[in-house]
Length: 72
Image 1 (cartoon, rainbow, N blue to C red):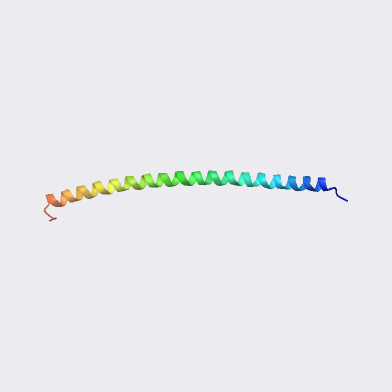
Image 2 (image 1 turned 180 degrees about the horizontal axis):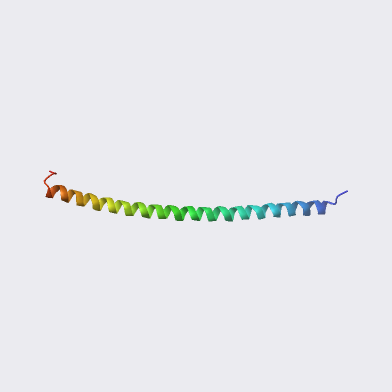
């Protein structure tokens, strides 16, 4: 017959192994989340830059239209 102490120890070892796997998976998820945040921040920076460029182009186009008397 198996002693109760050894059964408890066996279960605790299994739990420790499972917890170790979970910790590894959590670290991977944390790294992936950080990478996604950095990617999104870069995309937002590019988008803001594009908005500035578009606003500049619109301003220049308005100026050209006025000079050519194409706009009201």
